[in-house]
Length: 575
Ligand SMILES: Cc1cc2nc3c(=O)[nH]c(=O)nc-3n(C[C@H](O)[C@H](O)[C@H](O)COP(=O)(O)OP(=O)(O)OC[C@H]3O[C@@H](n4cnc5c(N)ncnc54)[C@H](O)[C@@H]3O)c2cc1C
Image 1 (cartoon, protein in one colour):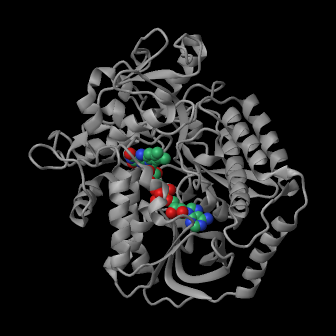
Image 2 (cartoon, rainbow, N blue to C red; image 1 turned 90 degrees about the vertical axis):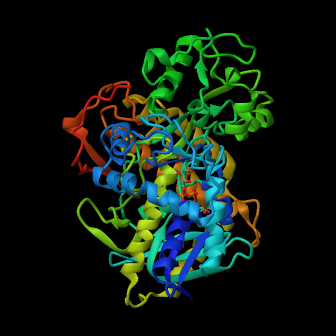
Image 3 (cartoon, rainbow, N blue to C red; image 1 turned 30 degrees about the vertical axis):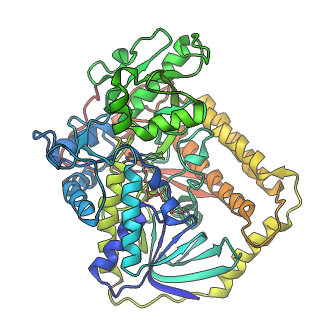
């Protein structure tokens, strides 16, 4: 049986930053980090536009308080304000620390770190490395892990969390290359498993964003928080769904409908294209519904709008957003210097996740904590984004809370002994799960069931939602979940069996999808990214609370937990 003082699942920004902090706090703590991809291929590497911090390099009037206010307003007042305070106060120092580590940020003429405008932020505070910010940061972090002696298990798939007597004790994982199963024992387990964009049929997320960490947490009877709040990014490249960064609008691009109008004038007259994402995604969806979307031949009535960069000029496009230009050129054959890009909303980010306190300790329910179990990054809900995340606050969350949770874990493990478990029992259960899948003789292909599930989620829990559409959706996914017993695998091999991994990932997205739909169905108001046509206004009296969803074989039960409001009183949100 493998053992470490601390085991971290996830090699993205949150997991790597936490591992590094543990080693910085005490180099003798033995840390293992597991990723089902190579860490450098974690979705963090794809982050484009930047990371927010009130460094005041461009805008001296900025402050952490202004950043905190923008974040809370952006969240539609559902963010926990103590968590937001930590996020925004610590932002400048974590950026300087990254820069000292060697991260190559873009610069101003005077050599300081450059900062650009981003949606919902009242000042220019987003630091960036062209439009490849995640790449620049993740590479530096991974190199630092190796230098600091963190044991990396890459291409291992974690199947189960071992959780007994309210304590996380380790996990069971599968070596993708050889099919070998291992139990890992640890004094503390941290999840940094990223988002779940693959629950939907059109997403900017990578193929590995299947919410495994959330599903494993739910499987041991722990709740998930605020799952109804899914961010649809306004500018997914049509039809593929990959992201065209908000940085493109931050640098001055326009959104236009089939009449050529900058329609954001109607929806957010002050902030225009730089309104927060929930508002901009709804605006695009409404324009398309009203027949002002565009067809491929340029005529009206299609299902995308235009993102127009043509007035920005080649030099600016190539120096500030070269990767976005390249994506449009490579994937849909559009040269954005001379023609507009076709875009529409795409599932992008999960505001909800594993409920944690500001030390990253996972909650058992609304009042009690678990032992030995931590989470940070996109899989966690601390909650700094509430009902809607502002762009460039997520990388920041990974770094601020990665660092903070790392240091809390180092404190927590102290002189604790390793827990004791019955290894054979867990190995056997994992073996049986795999064997059952291998031997199942149904007629349904994994990819077919997954596609139907993703279509159902996109159709029944998208940008706009109603009671009727969601209750149909819940029934459909229950019957799709039942169909899982009818799937069969073509590939029966033990080595590099990616079909087996996809089968287990499908179980994750099915579970996460049910939590999303049920939480959304129960919340009878509109707040941030959760937009109900049958309940179009925010209802603070009934719903100013975090949703906790508890999943079991009998369905999902919902409870609510208070929001921390200690600085900014909820107001109407206008842009
Ligand atoms: C295209 C794109 C652009 C973005 N741009 C920005 C931006 O400019 N600014 C910003 O603030 N945010 C941006 N975001 C959001 C931000 O990138 C993510 O929220 C953040 O990087 C998530 O980091 P993470 O460490 O939580 O998880 P990830 O980077 O997603 O890493 C998850 C890790 O968990 C591992 N894992 C998951 N399940 C298992 C399992 N079962 N077994 C083993 N390992 C597992 C994966 O292998 C991976 O290593 C963007 C997101 C996308 C998709």
